[in-house]
Length: 93
Image (cartoon, rainbow, N blue to C red):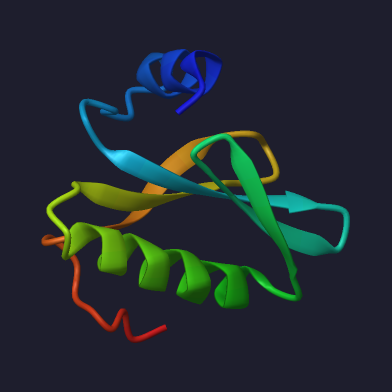
């Protein structure tokens, strides 16, 4: 995770410990997933991007990596929406 994003998340009170994070963001009319310094997308909806991110996070979680999916809202606030081992899979979206 880029250090600037980690610092921003900590400042907002979102724990970043050792998670591998998938971050959903909206740019104009499309959604994107950021992970490991790369950006994936565009996706047509938040739901579509979230399903892809949860699927990827779940696959990595099964390999022993602590993963979660975060979403940045229009105000720029970031919040966790799914965590491996804590939230149900499939997510039921």
